[in-house]
Image (cartoon, rainbow, N blue to C red):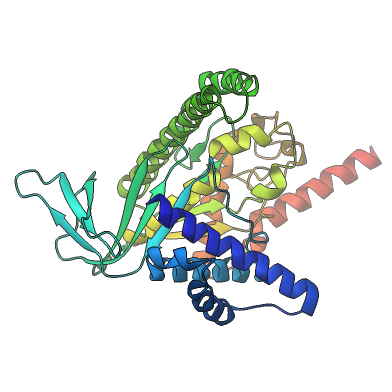
Length: 384
């Protein structure tokens, strides 16, 4: 397994460096077909003949991953591809075909997986039931920074068509104090991880005092990596449970969420740590694919839609609510008292209603009336 991890990482880094040199010297970009032809020649040389010892398809998949990384960069969906690290990072390699999985009849939790270059097979422990009529498409082998090995197997199954005829709309506001706020008033808060943050600081100090590369340094690094892994597992477990509850119990046909500029928000160094701890992006990813399974449409509201500033009763725009310290406020037009997050979630429901009738939210009439009322009050204040 380690030999495969190393070979795949080498191929990825080798051709990333090759592409950088070609562009710097010749001013052109190399593509997948050029990389593949050079890889064949590399295997025939004495210096790189060790590449023949691993599965050739895994090496080809590494080139496809590099090609996808460049495509995402040119589409401005990701940063420029980076070199993969050898130590203290997540290692992976993927096998696209010729995968066989055998499960013990007396103990269905254990089995053996057979893939190319592993004649004796690899013993595995299954953590979930496998689809009976599914066809294995590919398998990804993973080594975590805590030296744990996993095999993620992808099955091809027939999608069950789910028709959701519900016309209800659920609004979800994302925040820091309360991670998730629903339009019906329910709030969900990320588990308190402050005690783990203190442990992380302490373990980082211990690691910094050890001589890099020594046995004690490796013990301290492993202890720190396990703590990071525990935090990630706690957050993922909570997010999976919350997203499952939202799509299965809400009985909504549409879910409206905010289109947050997370990359821009973390530029505020006072809030960056708190924003990262909430894992908003991960929440949206899980919500989208789980909602799709249940036939629920997920709508992302316009980034500049004033969901927090707008009164959900009359449409008045309160500019003072831009201050995040304002958690509750009273509308000066209709007198309605609002909780900041619940009000924002209700306005997201209104956003979905306007789209469902074919109108842009900017055409919402109460907003126009509220702006007119605001101008009238300002005129009265000037004239005295």
